[in-house]
Image 1 (tube, one colour):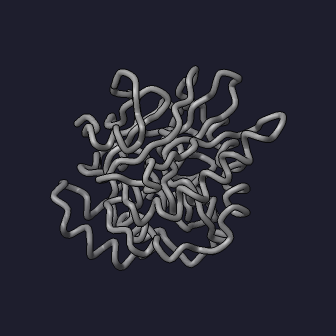
Image 2: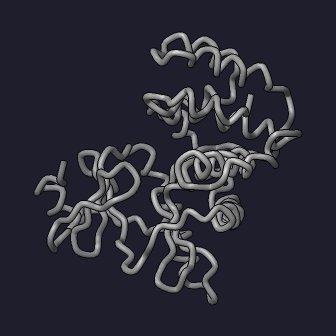
Amino acid sequence: MRPPDHVLDLFVADGVLEPLAGGQGTSWRAGDLVLSPDRDATQLGWLAFAQARLAVRLDQEFPRSLRLALPVPARDGRIVIDGWAATRFEPGTMPCHDLATLRATAHLLHARLAVAVAERPDDLDARTDQWAVAERLAHDGDAALRATGLRPEPGHHDLVAALVAGLDATDLGREQLVHADLAGNLLLDASLTPFVIDLSPAWRSPLWAEAVCVLDAVLWFGAPDDALDDWRAGVRRQAMLRAALFRVFSDQPCDVARYAALGLA
């Protein structure tokens, strides 16, 4: 679905509309803007301003080590118009799925986010989308076991039960604002600086967010299965079990066999 004319008008978006590849495949370029649908006004009300401040700060550094997509408000000041939000289009970028770069970027980004957003935003509790629900289930084994009964995929319950059985009370570290979907949302700009888009907010341990990134890279972006070897024991295993639960619930439908073949449980 293309952005409606009134959305284009309010964002002062000109130029030829063209669909953009990547992500959910639902974003459009219009001139120097990227317009994306299904955005939550409550979430972006606080996130966009924090993201904009950090994006500007990062772009002022020299040399640049990290960049962040810059949110753009509509001309009436709103961040979201009928579910559509805008960021500045960055020309000359290319997708990056290199695992070492992803992990290094995760460390840099989360260090900066910890400073940029020092306290947990209350609006995170209002999220009801499938990713927010999955994130909560990933950190509550009993709730995960109850929720799997609602899933139609054969083997889903057994997979969830095996993952939950491996959980213990290990502390994953200090929680903060993290990007819960980095692996599919990292570009390199024209100077090969990491450029992060579509910030997916969660208030969790950076180790958990990194585990999600590694898991996604293995599942969907060509990283070898042995990249998981460092995540099969100790605190990293606990982070990876929760990462797997997150994806097993957020994927709709879930490829149960693909997750089971990784032998994470």
